[in-house]
Length: 142
Image (cartoon, rainbow, N blue to C red):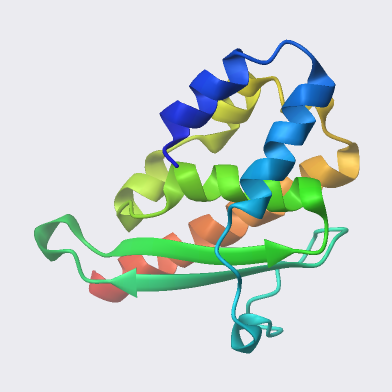
């Protein structure tokens, strides 16, 4: 699902209970994470829940490497946050990932003010992990 579609759907929901249910539904739509990807190397540090992110880097010609992601969490809301991050980042070039501000999207959704401090820290950790993978992919071609 594209980030614009998520933003549009979110805007249709007035109540935060409905918005949380939608976030959980987004998490349920994630492709299953293969068991082989549940490694310490893919585990995101700094999250209160268990979170794994696996990054695939593919050459993308003159635009530089493009990254795609799969991931999972043992927490339903966090799975939904992962789905939103993937809609925002997946398929983009490393250069684009490093220049984009996902927190502006979360602010637009009103999510950051409705997340617990632990979930906010976890979100920041997931973004930092994605950006670190993008930075490493960019450095590998420079």
